[in-house]
Image 1 (cartoon, rainbow, N blue to C red):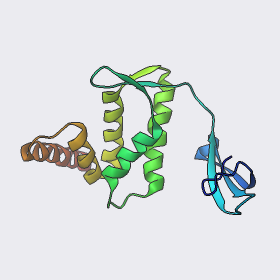
Image 2: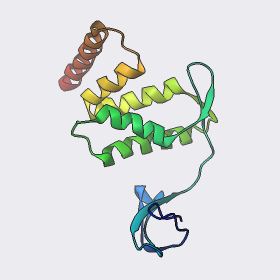
Image 3: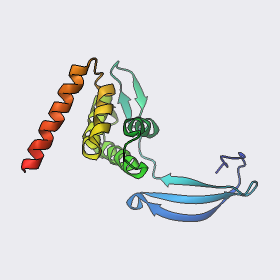
Length: 157
C-alpha cells in the first residue's frame, strides 16, 4: 500500500479490525520510510453498477461522489461523518442487493432523499433543492409544507 505522505510502496500493518458489521476491515498502517501512520479500508469487491444519467449517458457507480453530495447537504448540520457514511453504506448495499447491472440516477436520488429525510430534514431540503432543481421560492415552500405535513401525520401515529 502506497504511503499517502511520501508515496513509498512499503508499509506495515499495525492494527486490523472488522467494521461495517464485518463487511470490511480497517487497517492502521505505518510507512517504513517516513514512519507516518495512515488508515486503509478493505472490502469485498462487488460487481460494477452502471448509473444511467438523466441525459441517457452511463457511468460507474461512485461511492465517493455519493458521499460528497451527502456531505454538502449536511454541511453545518448536527450530522456526524459516521451517520453520513452509514447512509452511503445502506444505499450501496441496497443497490448491490438489487442485483441489477444498471440503475437510474433518479432511483439513487430518491434513496438519498429518503435516507436524509430520516436523518436531518434541513439536509433533505438542501439535497432535494439541487436534485429536483428547485427554480423558485414557491417550490421550496411546497416541499417544506409537504415535509411538515408528513411529520404531523407521523406524530399522530
